Every structure is written in structure tokens, then in C-alpha cells.
Length: 136
Image (cartoon, rainbow, N blue to C red):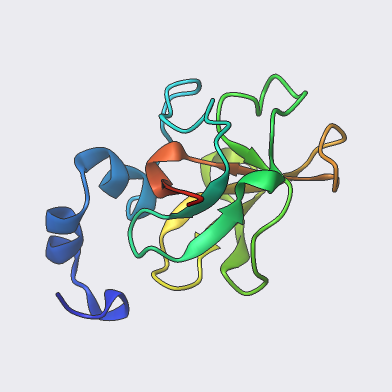
């Protein structure tokens, strides 16, 4: 398998499930309340489903008090700075901050302000973009 930074679209389609490809490569969104890690409360790390980069610690996961954001896994901080990058997203006639995996360039979700978050930041991340690594 080539380095993830050199993978072709065909290689991504082969590596990822159709839902993961839709989210990570085509910048899609899974339906709210459908994600497999939305209600996960186990201790561990959430990594990028495409490349395995460790992105979020379970201690930063919380349930958003904003009903518009509560349908996807919520994190108040990334595990290590530099693991994600934020860029403007003006799609769908609105301005948002897109969260992208810095290792493979995969679309993870969006960053919003959220008063119910301990840090005031809400990383609204698709479950399909994540793999959970339980703490041993």
C-alpha cells in the first residue's frame, strides 16, 4: 500500500468502506444519530479511520447541549496540536470551519463554538471518519 499522501482515488475507494469514502474523501456527512461511536463512553483514543493518526482522547468527548450538533460525536479538543488543520468551508451557502486530518487530508467534520463545551469549542466529527482504539 502506498503512503497515504500518495494514494489515488481508486486506492482510497478500495481501502475505505463506501460510507468512510463518502465522508473522508467526498466531504460527506453521515445522518445524525447514526454513528457507531456517538454513544461510546469507553476510555481510549479516536483515530482517523483512513490513516490511523490519533486525533481525540476519550477524555475530550462530551455530549453537546446544542440540539443541532448533538447527533455526531463531540470533542472539545484534539489530542495533539498539529494532528488536524482547520480551513474555511463555504459550501452549502454557509460559512463553517472544516476539520481535516493533517496526515491524510481526510474530511473529519466541522468546528463550531459551543457554550456547553468545557473549552467553548465543538469538534463535530463523523463516526465514519473515526476508529476507536480502547485503552489497554
